[in-house]
Amino acid sequence: MSYLVLARKWRPQTFSDLIGQEHVSRTLQNAIDTGRIAHAFLFTGARGVGKTSSARILAKALNCEQGLTTEPCNNCPSCTEITEGNSVDVFEIDGASNTGVDDIRELRDNVKYLPSKSRYKIFIIDEVHMLTNNAFNALLKTLEEPPAHVKFIFATTEPHKLPITILSRCQRFDFKRIPLQKVVDRLRYIVDQEKVVISNESLAIVARKGDGSMRDSLSTLDQVLAFCGENVADDDVASLLGVVDRRLLLEASRAVFSRDNQTVLEIVKQVDSFGYSMRQFCQELIDHFRNLTILRAIDNAAEILDLSEAECSELKSIAATVSTNDLQRHLTILLKAESEMAHSNFGRLVLEMALLKMAALAPVIPVNEILDRLKALESGTPLPAVASSAPVWEKSAPAQAPPAAARTAPPAKTSSPPPPAAERAPSPPPDSTWAGFVTFVKGKKPVLATFLEVGRPLAVSGKVLEIGYAEGSFELSKMQDPDSQGELKTLSHAYFGSQPAIRFKSLSGEASDAPPSLQEKKSLEDAKRKQQLREKALEHPAIHAALEVFGGEVGEVVEVNK
Image 1 (cartoon, helix red, strand yellow):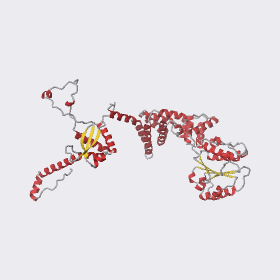
Image 2 (tube, one colour):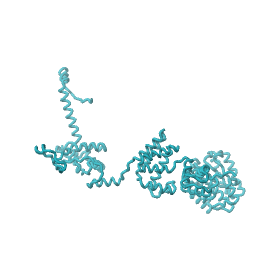
Image 3 (tube, one colour):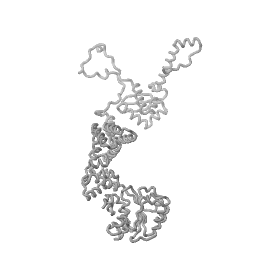
Image 4 (spheres, helix red, strand yellow):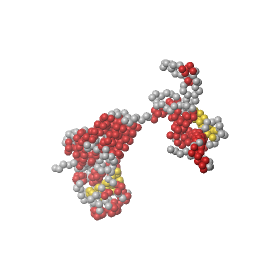
């Protein structure tokens, strides 16, 4: 007898055998129990998830000689014939081969006749989306009002290609992709029945290769058994299927988290020596870091991830050592590297640089810690190992000149205490501090800096920042806006290293006692520079000679940039 592949040998024969489609099984069984059996069904979903098998099981449940039942007996002649595909009352039609209107007309003529020996005449049309529009139109009336002894079951992977007139006449059942763990459990049951020795890790690789399809997973398992026999080794499965060994992914993530550049480069070398695709390995790494991120972010990640229980527990222990923010940054680097590899001839180099960058990635400081530091700075509490802030300039008492004897005296010993504040070097004047602060703001918020340039610096220090504006001016109203005050408060804290009190003063009249604004100082300096330039030009001998020869006077002096 010829060999029967596992996908056919272990095809589901009852609703209880359907894996991952419990919502379909329960609905159909309830419909049979209550007698609410529709005349047309549409089964949609990915390949290999049980659409055609469900159609056969439903046909057996409707035509079983034991009567309408939620679980066919699979022993009576009717069930046996449907299982073997030679029932005279159950027609399995390939929609890809019978696409024309003539085929549908023949089917429509056949519908009129009663079943030969079964309860219902059932038409199972697989890949129904391949029918032409004319074929669908020829089927419409029959599909809407078929004889009582006829049932239609359609199966398709692309329901969007069906006309809406067909969809509205069918009960639609959407088949889901089968979760990885359920596929692994089913494969474990099958290999135990087949007396095959294989680990759960290898079965997980086979199931992952199937990508949610039980038929694809069984076909892959058949290939593995043909290569390895009844004793399957993990290395043989990885090399045969050409998939990346999960151990390499685990070692790569551990090396990145431990900042081990040597191990990172050795893993890339291993991948290259095994003949794996660098881009495929990068995609596997992306999926691996996605799993780590989800496991770190939520507690019940097993419901979201296609991972076995052993893999979940192992990855969870790795993810616990890294923050979610760092994992997201690693993922960003990998996604960028994967897109670059699609257009690069140096896949290995791109991957190496990405992994080295991930290994050198500095950890992110949590926001809560930054807020704690800001609060401590506001309260004046010293913080250990904090970067020095911008210098704080405050008005200080004028320095007294030391006596002559003190100027000629030898330097004091190193053990002597530091000089009092009055003898230290004087701090820069407030004007220079104000100019530096406005320059700092201009680099962060240029619009806000333009308003500061108009203001008069009445008091500038790390404790108080008082700015004067003309009474009723637009600049004063703008700076009193809560948003502007909030931005100024943040920037002053960043510049002075403390939180000065910010006040705005309305100045009436010319306010001659107030210091000039930066805009006024700039205007005065420009006017002074132009006057000096004019005087210098008038003193030039060539100008004197030109005035004597041609007569006239100097109108305007323009500075030319060299």
